[in-house]
Length: 314
Length: 230
Image 1 (cartoon, chains in turn purple, yellow):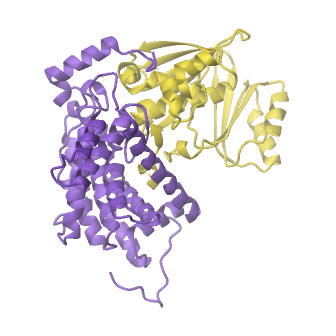
Image 2 (cartoon, helix red, strand yellow):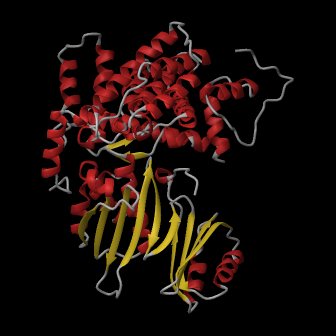
């Protein structure tokens, strides 16, 4: 990007109105902002009428809650009353410790930590719904694992979370982040795009690279349906968190290698919205189709309806 | 939307609408009721009734009623917590196509009261909720503003009195709603305020002989802040 000209006053509107990422990038240029993360800090502070320091410290709280969600999910074997979750993160942890990794420990750690958070969510642990509770494993699982591997300083990690939030905002503005609106592409797909963009932002400020990573991640999951067995956030949601996490890492690596998206991110988002609207209701969080309607899925749903009590402790 | 709507809320899983939203409805209902809970009946409608068990909706509603926030790890132990506090709870599950998919009706009863106290709330997505009924009166508020609720006998001039009391202490009204029940002549004013309602205003209004009840609720904290439009 071009260096700021000293004679030209930076543009600071009273309120930022954006329709997507291209508007955000335009504001970045006219406002002489060096990074997309910094733009979204300013966007939030301005539009919510909050001091910059409040916005940043609130994101630090989000980061801390994400870290807690990983350690809580790894603290013990997670099981759910439906029987569908049976210590996935704990098994992955053992596999990792025993040297079973097929692609190195970093990859397996991403898988393990994503499982840990998604399982923690299913087991009524504390998570950050980023962008939703059902996709809460992706950012902590992929983004925090990579950031910690590279010992990235906390302030830069927080900036990256603003990039992630900004990408999510651009999706919300043009389509939706909700599975009941657009299927899983809108939940785990959005989480994957947010994570890919945040990952790239740790290593370069180049907005072309960040946009491309987000676009790669979302393009690859277009059409993904939301078909939870028994209406629970367990199967297939938790493994789809893992898919979204590793997809984010792959997308980030491609963007960092200099590969650029052919379709602009905003157009990918609009395509996602159109696909979501074309999707039948049975595949949008109603548990009437897909995996939820398989014999095995229906059997689990029936057994759960009969046996589930109201009180988890009882 | 806002960045922190995307990056949040920080909440107990597994579902923003069925767990976090349920806890928030319970929390607001208790704030409106304003007394220790002796007995509460919680009626879950539609999707809350059908998938609530798998999402901890019952536990979350009760947790909110006991004052827990959406990110409180004790949500899953709310039944035990209610027992410790000597509160009894019963549940009902109802399918009613007239109601919003995620509706809860919370009925508080107290041996010392002649009538039960009923609060109805809906979970509208992403953890955002609305309270839509209080003792049969239609209302519409979330936790986004500082609130002043005044129940009174429907007589002319009540809005003026409330406005004057607030103005005397420099409190600005952002939104106001009034509604009334034609049969009972009971009316309710809901004031959404830029500042929290001072205790003195609540006390003065309570002293008015047309006023039957005054409730103030400060806006909910960060974990409850959703920027849906009221």
